[in-house]
Image (cartoon, rainbow, N blue to C red):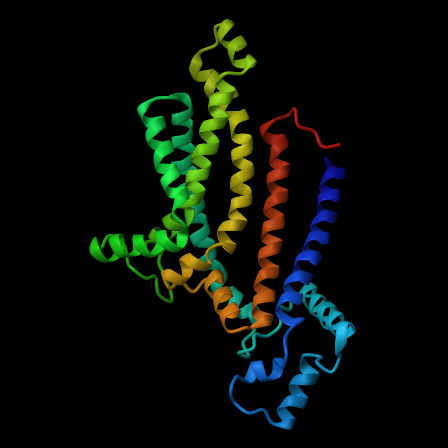
Length: 312
């Protein structure tokens, strides 16, 4: 197990450097005049240009200059310095303000997927072919067919404007109640996938040999389901939910934009729209770390859920 964790950590390092290099190249390699992009339409004096050239190491040109600036950024990142946005604000300060909001939103979406999706999936799997099973399959198919960019405005209009059950927008300092509707919208796709995955896994395990053997020995059905079927069925579900936590935090761009939530996704979208390279690279680097760590935790949980799984 220890060797597996070390091997995964080494893979995480390679994935981190590869991802950040690609994102950094997309944002900076083809940039014409970053100083003028920083200033916008305002004229830039020679003094300002000289200062910004030295600050951002723009005097290093060509492919060598690109890698020099990239490794300089990585060195600062490893020391905990995310750098400055083109607006002059510290990216770490912006992340400190936005991160708790996005975390709350992602946790709400994940809880919706776990409580509603997994529970409904277990019931549908136990009653395969019944009314509840067919109804949930139809509803999840409908949800999976509607993208978030359509679902979010519809939910905002009907549940926030027409039927004022929730605030239509979250605002600068959103409460948990204000984040409830966008959290449900964000977790709707995860809910549908978790439900279908749980339902399929439970139905398959109910037909397995060990379940027939347990029934032949006279073991109560409740114990068979709770101890054996659920434990084996939840392995792929835990995998999905662990990976989905990283996806929820990085995929909240549309939801946070529609509901005006000042989270990481909202700032990332603004950085892409305004071509704020340092902000985009800094936020993506943090999201990559979160995604890699969540994958590692999920893989370690395999051994807890199923002792047959061994990593050599």
